[in-house]
Image (tube, rainbow, N blue to C red; front, side):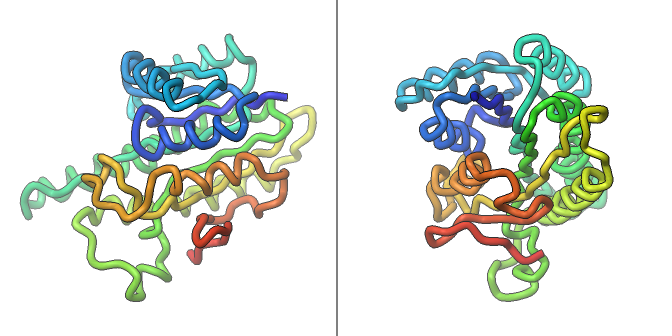
Length: 255
C-alpha cells in the first residue's frame, strides 16, 4: 500500500534530499513537495526525475506563514488523495541580525519564531484531520543538533551567529513533546481517528544553501534519519523522541 508523504520546503536542501532518498527506497509511495511557488516545485520534480526517481511526485504551494495557503493546500490534498500518512515539517529559516539595534533583535526573533515554531504548529494543526485518516500517521519535525541543551552546554558547538534559530529549534522540540502528550491522551479509535506519532530529528550539519554550503555532511546523509523513520515499523521508535542517524545507526539525541 502506498503512503502519501508531504514534505515542506522540498525544492532544495534537506527537504529535496528527504524526498530523493526516501523515494529511491520506497518508490510506491506518493511524494508531495510543498514549495513557496509552483515553478520551484516543478523544477525540483524535473531534477528528481533526472536523479532516477520513479515514484509519483506532486506539488502544492505552501507559504508556511500564510494560513490561507496552508488551508488551500490541505483542501487540494484532501480532494485528490483523501488522507495524509506522513508530514515532514522541514521548512525553516535562519536570520543573521543586521545590527545590534533592539529593533533588529526583535525582528530576528519574531520572524524566526513565526516560521520555525508558530508556522509548524499551524501547518500540523491544519493537516491533523487528514493524518488521522491514516492507519499509521506520523509527523516529523526537522530540528537541529543545537536544540540539544545537553550538547550545547558542552563543547560540541561553537557560538552561533544565528541565536534566534538555535533557540527556535529548542522551542520546536518542546512543541513536539507537547503535541505527543496531546495525542497520547486521545482515545485513538474509529470515532476520533488514529493516533499520530510525532518525532523531532536533527539531520546534522549538512552542506546546503541554508548555511552557505559550509556543512560537513552530504544532505542525503542528513536525510537518512527521516528515511529510517518513514520506513520503520510503527512503534519501532518511541513517539515523541529526538533522533539522529550518525555512525551508521539511529540513536536518540539528549534533550
